[in-house]
Length: 113
Image (cartoon, rainbow, N blue to C red; front, side, top):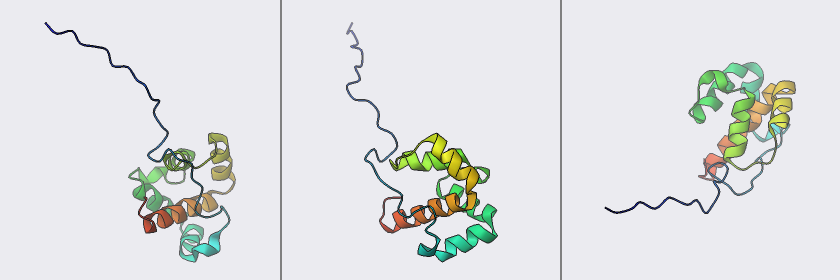
């Protein structure tokens, strides 16, 4: 009978699908880089939250959450923390959603979303 050797892990898992460091494609208050997203966020925040969640294959109710921002940030290796995600999402929900949606759109243009 053949003896099975134990599996030895020699590398640690990387965070997200893109372990290399990245940055947001636009700033938090960079609304004029995509006025359509900004208008949608301002006048129909729930619609924008659902778009973001849908883009990320998540539940529509999660679009404006701290968890969604943290998930997106870690997926693309964007520096930050859960604390900073909490502060941005709590103090500036619309700006946070707009930033994520602009980032998604820009990454789609670059074929990395």
